[in-house]
Image (cartoon, rainbow, N blue to C red; front, side, top):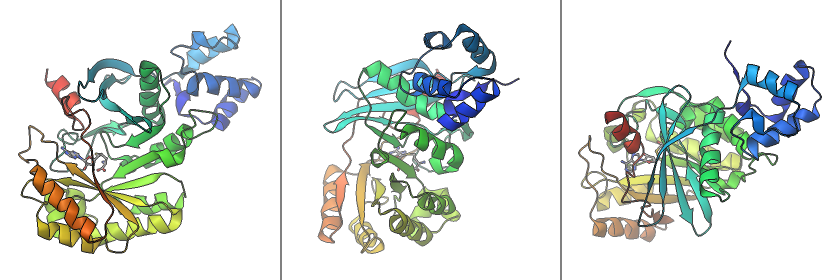
Length: 344
Ligand code: SAH
């Protein structure tokens, strides 16, 4: 029998399970706290639980604990990149970044990815599987333990397409923002998507307070198609409409991510078209200098070109920042550490 993944349960589900075992409901509260506040490594550590119940739990449930395989530390800004091994031997990456406003963790939502973005390393070997809510949570729990400080911000921008793992993502957000768990404010959680329109609309209806980041990367349908196969399925204007819908439903301003690729999407005309596309929207653009991936031959834009692009957008009244490149001296781009490890 497959053991139950108790770390993916909310307190109600945990309670239902314990009642089935003939236990009292307050046990759920205690166990939930061991899992989601104290982040225990074994059932043994549950000191206020009877030996008999612990045995029952060991026999029927698993804890889902990620194994830290490698940590790369940046000498420039202290960014730490983690390679974790899952129970089935698959590997994922997560990143810890320290900002003035707190500790931020970037997590993976899938092993691999099936979206096929041309500039991305995570998708090179396709999708292996979705991560469970517990596997998403434990990336944060393990990093928090390692750092010894509270994590305050979470971005789902690592490996995988979060909206391609919708149900588990939703569960993860609920557990992460649960006041009886790590209690991270939804406003400090960002989910990044390549633009799966129906799921963006579904997410809007959940009326969460999380930030939606949309990977745009091109000012027109024609150019977007060259970079992102998902554009074959959802046309750029449908994607923008879904962003507007998200704003109307949640009141949350959309962040657009735009990775600048030398000679591909970084000229003046691109900036003009982009400003026109987003005209009148309550949004923010994050310009990301592309992180070159060995298997792809895209180059970074010149730094002057990046500045010109930003200035041009600002002239059109668009709110824009250039993403600070964190951990430039370690394998920065999503999927590169895992890829290198599997090649070794
Ligand atoms: N699947 C989600 C989240 C994963 S990646 C998405 O598409 O949004 C997080 C961001 O990094 C996305 O905007 C993605 O397009 C971008 N990205 C991926 N590879 C990159 C690279 N080599 N250089 C710069 N940005 C990259």
